[in-house]
Image 1 (cartoon, one colour):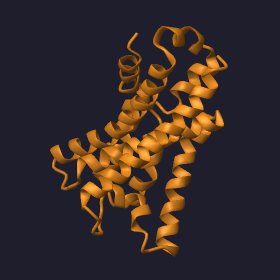
Image 2: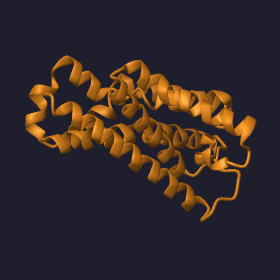
Image 3: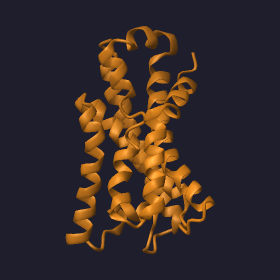
Length: 206
């Protein structure tokens, strides 16, 4: 069984994907990417489509029937990549739609995609660590705002740790946008390793 293909179909379909997608478009259209509402919505909405997929299957017992058909590594990677891709897509599609309908937001879509992918992947990792849907939906939001507060109040020179800078940079980075892409890719890889280790440990007990 192709676990990744199955997960992608589930992650990019249904009400859990299209409702956050529509909400993100409305926020962009009526408030803009620089608004506080967009910042608040980003880590929350990207976590909705698929960050708790593994937890749902684990708690329901469905994983016992599904896992032997796809293999452990394929199962874990399918969940992680599908979650991340759905999170990135959930930010990029509204931005494209907003531009297509006359919006004037100019943004690097690759940065926006990687930002959404990271926060969705982080939400999935927090859900796996805590075995909690609430931690998945709220944990990445809390970390997002902790970083925002640390930058705005205490560490103005550490703009590399300011989340809005990752998708709409205002400072000059080493290697420019490539530097941001490399940093975000590193964040995602580290998050993926942690996610893999957490799920592998849980799956061994299934």
